[in-house]
Image 1 (cartoon, rainbow, N blue to C red):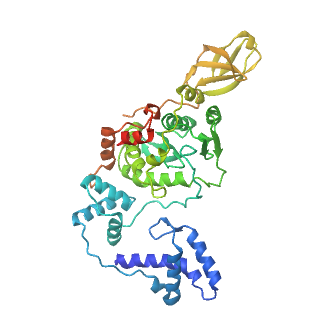
Image 2 (image 1 turned 180 degrees about the vertical axis):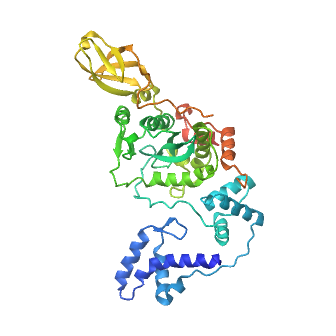
Image 3 (image 1 turned 120 degrees about the vertical axis):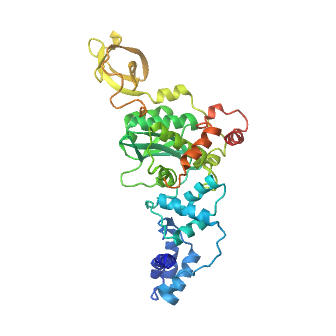
Length: 445
């Protein structure tokens, strides 16, 4: 099979699909110009399976070629460039693609760089793989919607959940929040349940390390529409926004981050048996803090960490405020005997509260300790008379521990480097005063 000819034909077909309409001889110059401008303003699914934009000048050139010579005139010219890359490196690139077809050329280059100390360019690897007939077999995702970007760090966080590998027969789920301005992963947590507890734990850890967002943008999944999460945002003064069903505008950035996680992190877990969620979390944390947060983002021109800290470290959050925000609450009516029930448990309160509608506030993992409030004011603690359940039915403790041809373990390489030289995450409360942004960057190095 002539893979070069097949590749050239795919490229020509893509060019023809864009140029054929504008090349119609019946169009006036004004009509043709309007059509080309509209094409240049949109993204198109390219021959590599990725969404790309095409400039006005390039489209004009394709239209001229199409009008002059039709489809054949759009075939790319064959280039004969002497290959200076060692054959051993190119064979390694081929082996990495054969081992996992969803690895991108960029990911293969990073692996070669980690193992060999040097690597050819992404484009060189891509050309070699195409010539060898080793086409990318990753998932093609929909185009990102919307061009809005927050003007500063912590102005807006977007949250969502991503399904990952199976662990002990259960599908691991990543709850993740990103800063819209910098694309930094502010809070993240892997678990085995898609519930409000997991979503809240990831959010709380993110706030403790990165500060408070001004607004939180979430979808309408059950973990994100709970009254508990709404209470957390209300206590901390955070505006909670939910996307409308079927209208995902503004969620393009987190979808793009999830594409990166799939193509650069999850692809390396194919065929690997993970012993626990803790092991998965360790690998992911190392990749995020050592690789993703430090690499220059193609749209912003800065690494997520650099852009997040550009205006200085964000203000810290009091632990007491976080504790209060992530307590759960329910309403109960106190009986004539000054008692109330909560999920099978019986509690006693002060006699003067009999007949009143009260708010009971509690840690969902410790139902033996209940605080009572009326109209937001403390009204003492409830005394447990009968405890049948210590944990709220919608809350569970953290997931318990459960007991390739190239032989390159990319995730272990970056994990060892991360553990050897970095803290898990930056806690901005520990930063010294002064030039916090510069000192934080130096600390990261």
